[in-house]
Length: 143
Length: 189
Image (cartoon, rainbow over all chains, first blue to last red; front, side):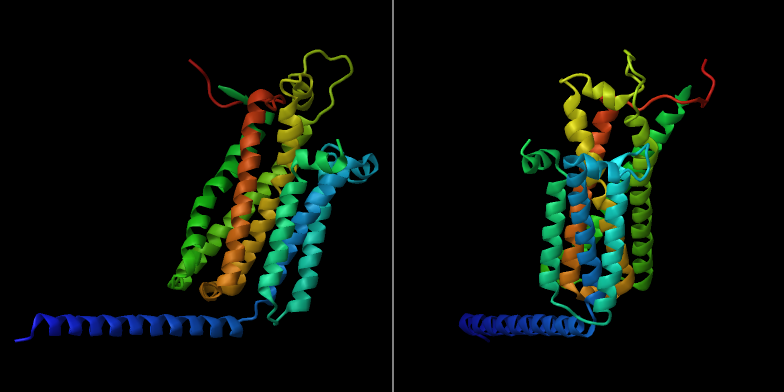
């Protein structure tokens, strides 16, 4: 018959063994994920993410431009009933698609530093939200 | 029971496309969050599940573009129409009606001015998201950085849609876009 001390030691040993297995399994999973990440080119995703950030940013810039300058507002009237909004959005979409096309060609089949790319894309996206916010537009124009 | 053409188109823009797009975010966010959940190992979706997710995201993209295009090119021109000089009743000219009073002008200068631009962030972001899902397929489950980036864009698109939708609802309450030929839906008692 085992003493309570022996049973506790055996349980501790089993727990430690289980923890080691779980740790090794987690390590193996992480290693596998890293290996898979390296084998799949992230260039096309990076191009799409950064281009979306650029498109959104230019939407904000053009919104501000159309609001700040009468000449730009007139330039952006691509469709009279919609007014400057038609040109602001169409121009931003054109820039988005062109930058996507250009970046996709540049990064096709390659892996890039995705962390920096996504950081830049988020920054552009955050600025686009700010630039479309009328009180912020007014602040920039000193209104 | 009847509805004016402009009312009907506005309903299609806001409730048909916009609200449906907004509702669809719950599913997309839930799935993306499940896939990106805090570093947990997640099972890759089966090819059928991936096809369904692609269909779901594609419908979202179509709804997003339909919402902004119908808003900018169908509803917005009615909203910003210029009334003839000296017209006292501005009911048919929502923008001018809102600007005619300091009590309501903010709905245009903040609400519409923000809504008309910020809404476009959603279709751009969702097109990118759908492309990435289509391009990387089930292997996306093994690419956490890309998943996290996609999730962040979806959250911003959701917020942008929420802002546009909420202001759209308020604007339509204070200065509805009305007019055009009446469409008879059914005969009353």
